[in-house]
Image 1: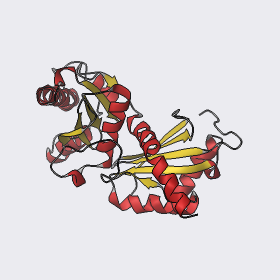
Image 2: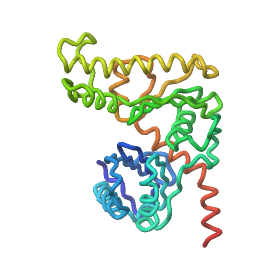
Image 3: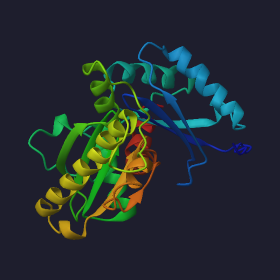
Length: 279
C-alpha cells in the first residue's frame, strides 16, 4: 500500500459497516481522491477499543496515524455496531462521527412508503450513483442480500428489490440437503453440470444471474426512462456476477465509500456551523 502521510494533511475517514464486512476509506479533506482503502470482517463482539487499535495499525501501515484524521463519517446497517464506532470516533479521533440516516438532507428524496425503513447504504448508493453516473440507474449490491436500488433521472430513491444473497443461498442449500455441501461461489465450466459441485455452482451462480437479469428487466419497465438506466454493481461478489451476465454496465467497488465522501461534502457546512456554535 502506498505511503499517504503528509505533514499537516487533514484526512476524512469514511466507514461503511455492513453485515459481512466493514470498509474504511481515507480521503484528504480537500479532495475526492480515495487515498487508502481497507476491508475487514464484521465482528459484532469487538469493542470500540479493539476497532480503534485495528484502525491504528492499518493507518500505520499506510504511513499515517489516527491524529491525521480530522473528520469521520459512518454508514451502518448493523445497529449494535453503530454506537461502538461512534464511541471510537469520540474517544480516539476526538470528535463524534457524522452518521448517515434518512433524516439528513443529502439531496436524495426517498420516494417510498416508509422513508425511515430505508437503509443508509441504499441512500448512499443512490447519492453516489446519481453523482457519478447520472440517472436513471439501477444499483445492485451483492452482499449478504442482493439488493436492487432504483434511482430516478432526478436522483431520487424510488425503492427496489431485496433477494437472498449468493452466500445465503449456497449455505441454505448445503445445510438443508444432506448429500450436498459448500462449494466455491464461482461459475462452473458449463451450465450443464456433470458432477455435484459443478451442478451446484451452475444452479447458484447462473441461477442468480437469471434472478438479476429478470429483476433488472422488470425494474426497467417500472422506472421512468428505465430503458436507458445505467446498471451499477458493487459488493463482494459483483465481479463474479458481472462475468456471467451482460446486464451489468459498471462494477464500482468503492461506490459506498465515495458516496460517504459526497455526503460529507453536502453536510460539511452544517457540521462546521454546529461545531462553531459549540466552541
